Image (cartoon, rainbow, N blue to C red; front, side, top):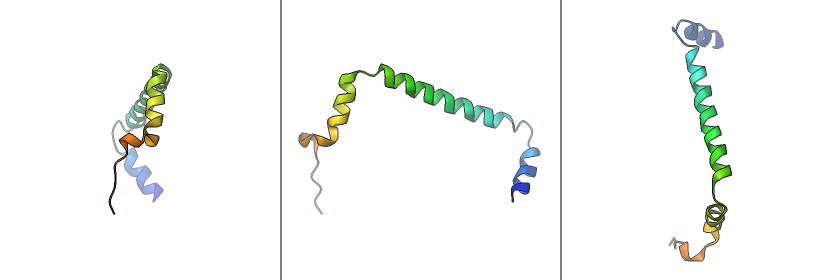
Length: 63
């Protein structure tokens, strides 16, 4: 099966650009996420981490 996929992919013109585009998107996403993590305010992070424990925000689910 791998030979079939490899043969098919070699017949596509410019197929080498797709992995490079994927790597670029992956890299940009994680660099952006890394930058956001270090620039996010501590108050915002603390507020978000306390949401599951906040009893005022709990919704009652009737079964």
